[in-house]
Image 1 (tube, helix red, strand yellow):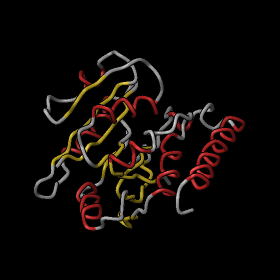
Image 2 (image 1 turned 120 degrees about the vertical axis):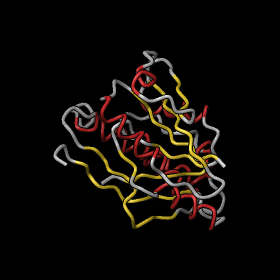
Image 3 (image 1 turned 90 degrees about the horizontal axis):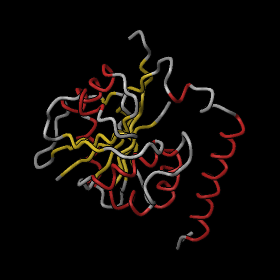
Image 4 (image 1 turned 45 degrees about the horizontal axis):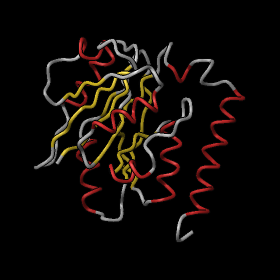
Length: 214
């Protein structure tokens, strides 16, 4: 069984991308499971291939510069796993998180996603990291095409359609540093943020309105 981890790559800091790989490399998988890393570049420079080691579990891909949501969806198209997790190029998985996700998803037939706590990783030393079944993610159309909140839009929709499970253990170290996209003025511009939150809410309300059982 394959657990696919998808990372959109754009102008990466080599040290951070390597640390993300190390955190994946050190994961202990349950018997019968292995991971693959879908390193999907938002562009065609081949930079990820230059930085990362020659590990056959890494699948490199490139594409036109189109933003993080489309890049993730291109990675999803190449993923072979039944379970999907996203890992940003500058974040770090905590030990054992993939195994915990697998145990939960295999133990409960009605659970289609598993989420974990995240901790900020400051330069001197919240968000939620989520694993989701491939069939549910594909049914949702992958990540939502909104700037900066594509994962939020996807997770809100997934939460309406299918039950999930929340781990109390920390699953991700979310790196905080000057220059990251989520700290930029564009990402935090008030009018744009209001628009993307509005369309996320409207999508959720439409799913409720049109889905059987609501």
